[in-house]
Image 1: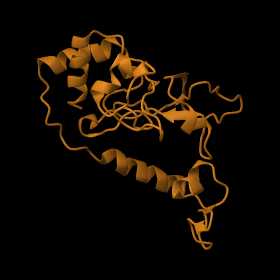
Image 2: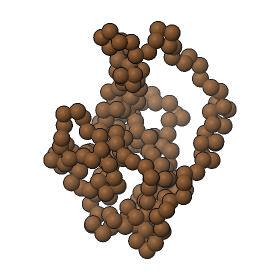
Image 3: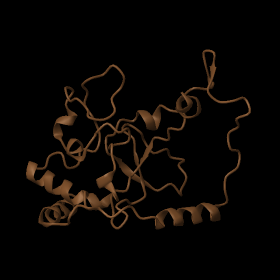
Length: 201
């Protein structure tokens, strides 16, 4: 409810007789100086995820070759495994008056545009995530629909009768999980190798 009141779409923080935020709550009206934000960014970049317990073995090495062959570094660029750019939500077009400082990769991964276009804070873009520490993270995609890397790279997740292992709307049992089609057409063995590599990051 708090998220709905402050972020999603509700103009009022009142739900029936319930107030989610107090009347004294105010939105921040100031922005930190660029120097402070830059310093904060440098600190965040200095943080390292825990070392992966997964070995960089022959299977992972083959997966790394697939990662390179399929052009994954174009978006997930080593060593951070992101290019720090934003991509277009499905159906969204870059406005002609976009700020020149906005670093947009003018493609779409076909991700459900709901959270990027139909909420108060929706911008029409999705940030390209880093793959660092992927082995201990989950769920996957912008809304956590895929519960595992195996599900993420399962081509059956694009079918309407797929039962998501992650988030799904209330009252929905089966649905397709759109977005990020890359890797879905690979052979089973190649998908296993790619996943083995991703778990070493």
